[in-house]
Image (cartoon, rainbow, N blue to C red; front, side, top):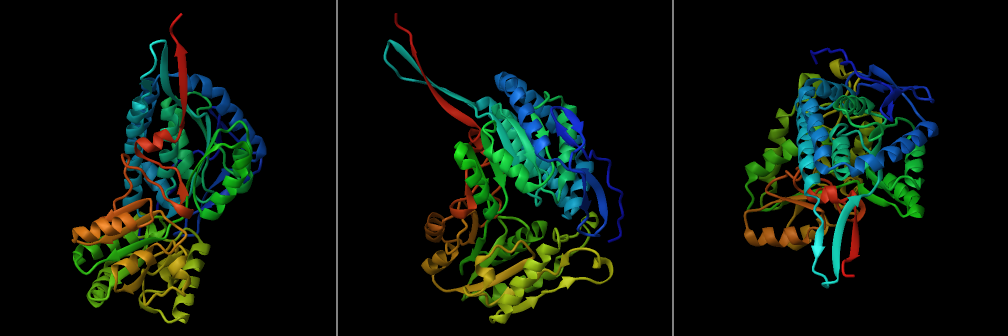
Length: 486
């Protein structure tokens, strides 16, 4: 952990109606999970600021929604340019407050650029229809912006989750109130600086920091907010959905996941293992699409296990500024969850083949670091089989039968991402059609792109982000019947 760096300059106030304002609820410290140091203190708002943001977004909506898609796209492309030019600062801020390696942070910023440009173009492809109609009438189908959007985002991708929600919303003509995670507000504020610099009209994009339950309930219950988009835990998503129900507002939820990763006997083992290690340790396993249950066919179990044990030796852990393979967990609660799951599993017969401990000495003393861990012999009576881990643990499960492993992979309340490796076309067709997940990766784990839909089923939520589907989430479909005959 050789690198020491001062936090780049970043605004700490709230951004409402095109102005930076101090919060009425004091300030809150932002902590570096790698060092335990306080990076900054950000302003905290309450009911007053949330209502001000809602009013500002409503005032801005008529003019913003009536601009041409090309006008909105011009500003979005300017924003993309600013993000690209400011990538080094944005990435450093993200790494320092969230912990992920600098290379991953830079990749996230580049994804922001792609999302902004994709949605700027996609907003111009929100085409209506002229439906065949009687000679006396013209039947039109129009797509119009939903209205004011409340966007609530998590800490694990503290920059891209914001852009992935705001960019399709503003492309469609909506205005937005953002509530980012309390763990990572600086990345959100840095983006607001650029929205301001890009010249977006006052009130189009607003940010309020503060108590999650207070802000979430106001946004969900307000008659003046037409849509809620949320990424986070299933438990919180259910609560927000209940709060939004009386107003019957449009809601999108991207919630928890518990991805199976199945390696069939005909798989390319080297690719399967290499891809597993790469994917599992993105963001230290703190990803809702992270492989959490590794099913390996009995005929190749020993060989695959040996390869995983060998491959994990190359995984480095450290301060994200040193650009290791993986950084710290976000907080002590994250560490405690991993410890509890491992204890439960080993008490019930599982064996730790590598890792298994919090890193606490020397350079790790003040951070939330945990060893990359392999857990063998996982069975259904263990918490880790059913509970999302959000940490650097690879749980190994042996299987024999194709239909049974599909059943076991589906044996979860979640249905976000799933992966399997096979070179048999019949297996590929059968398994991909039967896995009860919103996304399936076959011999690959790249399931998140600007052009393709992202989202889950079951308790992993509803609605989609990215691609055409992502922009469609922010429009209402209106039928217009025009009598043209006298």
